[in-house]
Length: 173
Image (cartoon, rainbow, N blue to C red; front, top):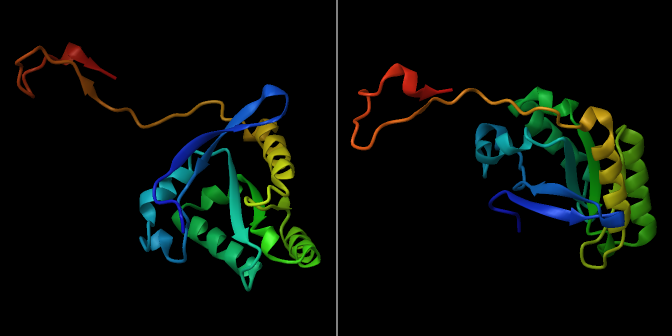
């Protein structure tokens, strides 16, 4: 199961604060070349201040799973690797706690990013995950100050006027 379309949501946080999250469809090996949902959704990642990666606790090699995600981002746009990242070990309720702690410690030692285990089913670790997300989003270097896009030509036409008949001063940039 994976998300098939990007979804935006508001996450309730402590003291009546909140933040916006985007759930971007799963990235699989080969996504940068168009495999799976591929390029169709990788571009949505560029708009996010902090990247949260989910790797299931029950996978055979969580480090390899995370490295696949990083490799796909690098192939698509190496600049994405400069964004703040958090690694969340999901489905932590499917394994013994000591094994989950070992996975978190191994990933935390391997990568210089926050690593948090959580379970959507039991709720275990969700507050810690929200705390880590809030801390990263609150850092000055992760603030989105300005979003700039390539200019889009918008032409104002009189009713019934055909394309190409408009006067130059009616064009808005």
